[in-house]
Amino acid sequence: MHPKQIEIPTKPIRHFLPQSLTIDSWKNVESFFIDLKERSISSAKDLEQWLFDRSELEAVLGEDMAWRYIKMTCNTANPQLIDSFNFFVNEIEPFIAPYVNELNIKLFDSPYLKELDQEKYRIYLRGIKKSLELYREENIPLLTKISTESQKYAAISGAMTIEWNGEEITLQKAASIVKDTDRNVREAVYTKTQERRKADINTFNDLFSELIQLRHQVALNAGFTNYRDYKFNELGRFDYTVQDCYNFHQSIAKEVLPLAEASDTERKNTLKLDTLKPWDTDVDVEGKPALKPFASSAELIDKSIECFYKVRPAYGEYLEIMKAMGHLDLESRIGKAPGGYNYPLHEIGVPFIFMNSVGTHRDLVTMVHEGGHAIHSFVTRDLEITDFKSTPSEVAELASMSMELISMEHWDVFFKNADDLKRAKKEQLEKSLKTLLWIAAVDKFQHWIYENPAHTVEERMDAWGNTINQFSSKVIDWTGLEDVKMRLWQNQLHIFEVPFYYIEYGMAQLGAIAVWRNYKRDPEQALDLYEAALRLGYTKSIPEIYKAAGIEFNFSQEYVKELADFVKSELEKI
Image (cartoon, rainbow, N blue to C red; front, side):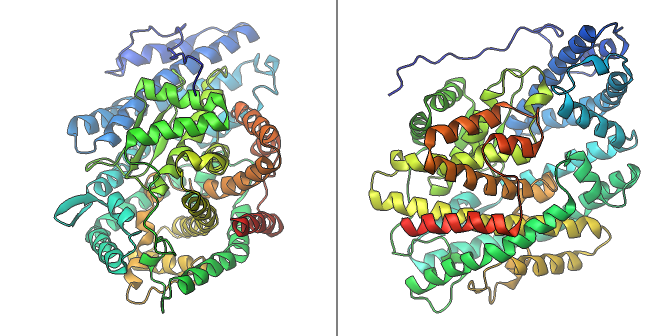
């Protein structure tokens, strides 16, 4: 099946930093920033070499920070790992920021800047210019505190467990039981989970209130009236506006919600229920047990590799390399941070995938999603500078969400039974649409949060209630569970750790549906375009990258309807 011998990548030879550099103090790092700051540049060639050296320093520091974060999230109960991460946040990062600003000034003050290839560096330079505009020295300690405080969310969530059948289990494991065909079991484990979450409602509210005020102060210091406007600039949202986000919300509510409600009505009728409760939304409607695509994390890895080989051999090789290098930590454990991620490692060029698998279909989707990110990391690893590899989320998530749908065409690797394969595809497509509703709700809620930073906890809960109701299926009955619905936002890690980084998933989901539509028409051409777009990294604008992929960067109601109708038609074929 895998005839080609894989080659394990090694780190490139460093030209600026010593190979043996240990980042255990700021003094070990500062000399390299001083070199860059004070270096004499007398030609465009010198300036470009200066950029390459700076890029090497950024890659090394970024990878060191990445490993500290990875190890901490793999074991949030280990105080040494937490201390190691916090050391970088508190003892390294704050000292980097002023130098970065000075290096940005040096770059823009250079008379040789205009002699560089302007098209090659166009996107990079607009980002540097924006960083210069946003930089405020007084924000350094605030940003450091925000980084430290926001990580508390993972520790609090990672410690959450419930007792089930005499066993202590994680909430991720509990979520898999909510697919049980016995409705009493589903309700019982759902109730236990919500009771456990409720125990930390005040802890999460207090943490979030503190984060809001810290972020608001950062925005004020930088000359903005609210953090939303600051964050749009910091995220480099050059290619769309706040109004575009509002248009996205409106398009999703108008075109996707009716499809979700039709699906829920069909589910309710098929299950022969008087009321469809939240614990009824994931169970198989025909009373079949939950899909079990794999039995262990090792099996998940091997089947994912086989699936990716079927999509395109190089993609299978990428996962094989990660497996061989130990860059996969997939199983759920007590004390492990929630969620899943693909962490780029820009020096070695081989990313790390982290997730919490418990044997569910959702875990399969997470794996191929993060695998899409991994493909992106591999195909951009040879780009000349680190910033070229640091794609905006609207592009990064296009890579991952497209792979969810593309890989679906080869899920027979996971589901040998034809009926199970159909169930898996149907569940994936229904989730693709319903996820858009949740994304719109989370994004719209954050706009309100940061436009109204002085709100009370009660006002926050009311604002969420008003927002989620605009994007919630009216078929699902929340009677008696109103308090649960009012705190659902606390389940979303992004709100705490990476504010406003969420609508990108929705934009990318629309793009992924369009990529998949192309794949259904002509697989090889669609993959060629998909990969060509990914290989651009961040050397073009978001609309240009989407165009390279053969799709549109478009949130209009007409386009959303076109894509939603396509998904609906594919569902009807299953």
